[in-house]
Image (cartoon, rainbow, N blue to C red):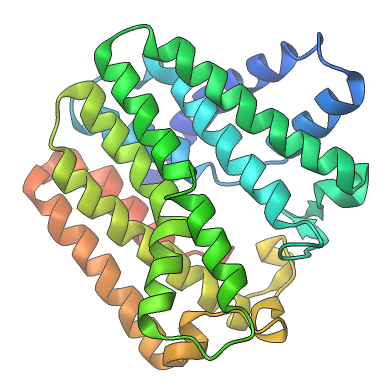
Length: 290
């Protein structure tokens, strides 16, 4: 096991324990609502966003163990977006993380409510954390801005708008920066806010990492193994989605992904050895097969 895998595993173990504790406290919710929320929250996944948040906190010398609620709120928002993204009215996917999508298990109405519940719970957690300090309030605002109508939701709207159309590089970049990029930019920026670090560099890093993540995602839809990815492969082309492969082709998309990874590394270079884990995380995102 590499140092990166050990470190990632440590972050992951801490986060999963915090997430299970949160899920165990849902007993006062209606049983169907609690079951459907838990189903998607506990269905696994790489937890890239919480891990990124924890690693960025440590980059700036702050103990990540004191910020578990913000990480759980972040994952609740990400999970709600996946539940809604899989719905027939959106991307219409039957599988997520190797399991049937939420709406395939609980029905569309309950899946919508599970997503609504997770988003509302995240807002509640962020409000409570915001009472701790001005920095926590600013970090909470950063996350909600990233998730909202000017962030992730705007990207999802654009994704629907441009489906089935030729699409331009500018339109593709807008989708990338909002639908995926904003929720990957928020964790390192939140960490910088809490630790008094360089927000601007973390914003640039998160933007490039989001670009890399979505470029890789689009490429995997074409060349990836559906069983490994845990979701249906080849759907983007069948549904006419605006992707890098559609705009640039596979070879140029691969070069763009390499360039985004290089840009991430260039930003992290200023932090020296403290950024070793984040550098490995960039390599992990670039080489991932799911």
